[in-house]
Image (cartoon, rainbow, N blue to C red; front, side, top):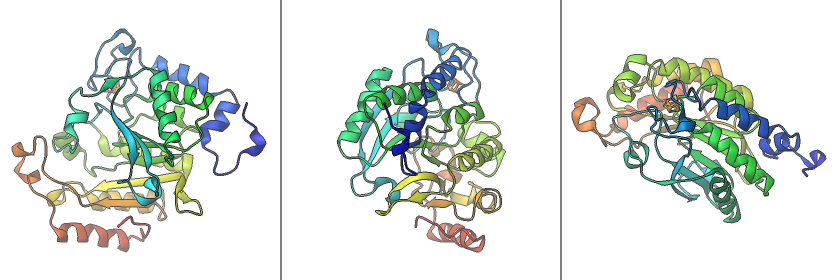
Length: 309
Ligand code: SF4
């Protein structure tokens, strides 16, 4: 049994919820969303518990393509021992430039039960990882909650990172309130028509901005411990696309005005042509250094100073 009096600001949120006996209820509520699936904002309405597949092509059981201590995330996430990263296959976005298409768009990976998922988390903790980092989680929130519930009962005690493309449903985010310690969403697009063209999702900016506001409400600005490792908060990622297609200024303004000037922000320059970009000449090149520098300058002008650059 967990002792509530031993909990500190650094205690992962799900331990408090587990001690209060509330995590199991969350799992049950989340699984109900699989029957007429609205786990993500695409709202396919299929019964995943009966094996029906929606756009994410994932039934009741998630697939894991790999898991390991990841040293390539932002410093506060990877630290010196690595982030316990679990890469799930499939995704609720269909980005034509996907940098991980073999994982996200093809059913590569091993199907796992909740028990196996819990074991993976415990193995990563035993390997010394600073946190458990769920990559591409938006279509499998119920299954993640079930895995966390089991792992918590077997001694999981490191923070949980929700590493998302940023197209998340309000209902799932409310079930994750008090479970996730660190939200790490992408903010991919400032314009709806661009999101539709390159990722085939409707209302991305609206859904994404609403999600980021909710994440900030739940966990606040990113907080680091004495070693510089994150234990709670929001870390936003923005991948700069060629030809200004990401709508960077719109996104940065939104962050500065509606989220927080203290937001921890990774403006990423590693875009490279991949997957289907041969069909999209405007996306078929790397970004130029000056395109990146313009975005950094906008961030600084808006007062966003916690940049992971
Ligand atoms: S989680 Fe998958 S099946 Fe459910 S609404 Fe989203 S894309 Fe469709």
